[in-house]
Image (tube, rainbow, N blue to C red; front, side, top):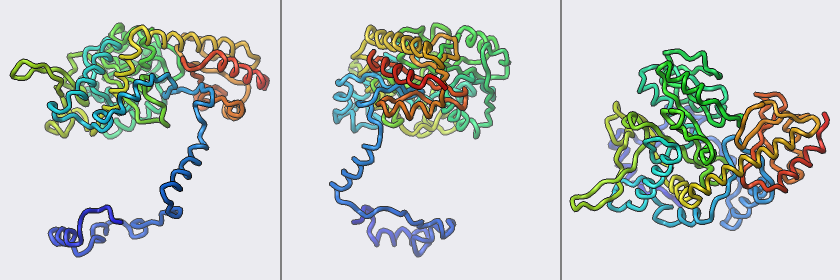
Length: 435
């Protein structure tokens, strides 16, 4: 069966128009050995056979419903109220793309406006856009935004930022002739040549940064302060606006979005009002028609598809609208008190686990710094080996960060980890407490 609607006559007409006699001529610049490589595909299956094959593949994965999970490092297992999935599964949301026509997209636009409003309350910032790809690309967009604002071509990034985020920022900056410099508190290396200082709060290693040092170092040198946050932590920590952040980014996956093997996720992006014209993506606002009726509209679009290319701030070609609506539903359901409770549970459970592990012979906490829900443990055995043993006890251990800190594991505890799960982890680690 052919899924291409063009007929032979259609193709002949098009080839005649561009002056070729066969489709193969379109690919002459590609070496012959690379044009039709063997795909080595298995034999075709009927629908039921495909389902069975995919189920066998899925069964090879570790199932979070049957395992206690202590893995974080950017993707987190938090409770997702059932209403989140119910709302975003409605056809008017689930099949929606960019809401270009306001008159037929009021539901989507209003939901995005609510998302922006709640995120503005959570971060304390003036402006929130309608959603970036993920936390890493949001950080990269923020860095380039700072370059445009300050007209400087160097950015300083805290060494405690997630390594994967650093890689994404480097990818974005390499074609822009922007130089990246890694710095560490108290950020004495900062000079007036930097466009921004980028800090992650909490850091990749889980501990909380002294944001007064970051704010002072950035603003005393005329740089912008960019902060990447865990939105759950804002249920109990100061909002970035309280320490004068200029741009706030982060991964919003913890707000009602499943882990899903790493995506799709939702990038949080917020800034001060004076930088409104430089923000990437789109903003949803409210307006009134000629009869005085209020409605939701797209008030700003800086994509190169919508404005003059030389004036665009980004070439973002889609938005995470469905996931932004999921985050809005989550925040509306849990409310201020609920988010505070979730953050408190993460904090106290993580500190209980850390204190118990530190008592085990051979284990220690190498960073004597305050932390939120993640912490680093130095282990008596290689973390990869410990994780293999933990899996046999139906436990997903922490992330092996031995390449950054020898024999260390990054553990994460959220509200989803029960006292029994934590004690089970302690008991299993105690079995292998000697080198």
